[in-house]
Amino acid sequence: MRRRSVSDMLLRTVRVITMLGLCSLVVVAAGWTQGAAVSPPRCSDAGRKAVETGWLPGHQVASVAAPAPKTRNEVPAYTRMCGPASAVVRFHGTSFWIPGGRCALNGKRDYVVQVGLTAAPPAAPAKSLDLVVGGPKAATVGGAFRMGSVWVIAKIQLANYRSLDVSGGTITIAPSRRLGTFTFRLRDSTRVSGSWTCG
Image (cartoon, rainbow, N blue to C red; front, side, top):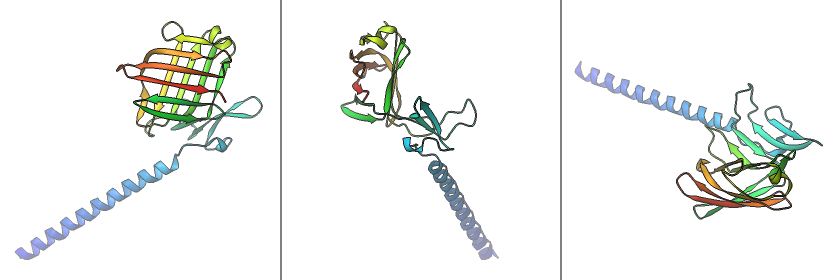
């Protein structure tokens, strides 16, 4: 009688462990299929149903985002900028090359640089550079612009860093407005620098 109860307990324990193992496999497999369903879009995906596409006049692709939002408040996991622009960001002794994007003049008011692939949680961070310098001088003649003295927005995302928290620095726009450089200080006093070209 005692032997039978011990063997029954062993059998039940093996069944429980087997069920737990199978459940974990199902969870892992579900995670893989979810991750596989949302992958970074390519600019060649523009116009497809599952991708939100930003267009410029003349049927030029400005950006692609996936998955395409179903509601106004939904944020795509990935947004890739498209175009001939590129940037280099130097951080912690490493240079990160970021391809694809554009420079834009928002009328005669702002100068905008958007390059690379931005990832929103829960997607892993990607590489992107977003710069906005406000004011007619930035849009028409270029020059050096210090954060705090003019309206400047700087957002940088790098692999392993969701967002570099910029607290100060300078953006220098060439007179042609086709390229420029930047030097920033992060909140923890780390320096980050780099350059861009509009292509």
